[in-house]
Length: 221
Length: 221
Image (tube, rainbow over all chains, first blue to last red; front, top):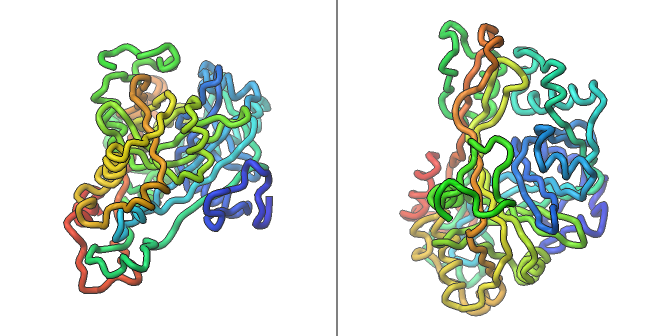
């Protein structure tokens, strides 16, 4: 999974190939920047797309869920799956309706999940979910006990068949529209944090921990 | 599509049914609040999940794309599809690793697309894409010409088989963890706008239009 070529015919970006990337660094960076993935699977011929958290560790990406979940059951059986993470980076405003667009980064991973049963790998994956979103948090809280570990299913996808598609930059207006009086450019968008909402039952003497403050800083709240 | 019951067995939320909703008002509000949808379809047994813009008009939701796109071709043939829109509303921090979660709203629409060929409906749908993201913009820019309309395919899904799932509120720690010294609560997240980036070739005398200023205000930039 290196270089500029697609790892498979079905991963190759056909439309606007100049917007595609297939290298591990780009794939990892787009996966790691996202909190939510969309996971696709097929049941009785019907595709389902559900939001889920994900965490990349090396050349694998993990998802998790309740052992009672239908999606986890289908995916855990090794059915074909697709995991997609998308960032909306901005609204692109052109002089013509046609050239309006959005700036985005999106990674698509094709593959089949492998259920993670080894306790060590499972615990490491759960730590990765938390640490990826809130670095430093794992050490601040109570670790999962055996019962909680048993209730949680973890699935692993390898990143052998993945591709990135993205758009960046300003509008691509046609030459003959450039003199129109409309404002043109980009409204950049990003996820931002609002004011902390302490739990109703939180002891008011407990201040936000370093991991919580770091999370706020990450999202520029 | 009214009331508290699922419109179909396969739409019914099985896990944590207390987090589900099936009424038209909730479904519309979650669809309308989102800029990006994830669209699922199946090709040769493999599910694909791709990001796309969407726009709801009444009881239908539209997507569009290049007539040359593989996804549009598959979906336009009436293959089973799934359109999902997810909002990440916050990171939920608990005293135990197990009860960490995210607050979110997600709508899942199952169905088969119908290609929109009537020029009037097509133009109205394209207007809806723009007006939903940037209200007032349609009147500020050059409308699509015949060539542009021909290059753009528009697909319609009806909302007959849709469901919403969401989580809101603080962490649900176990009783025996409440005395732990970890900070607990929610870090709310929302999309925010950054400083405007005018196009490199924009006449500097052109100020941001009312629609552009309204977009910035919508995202609290």
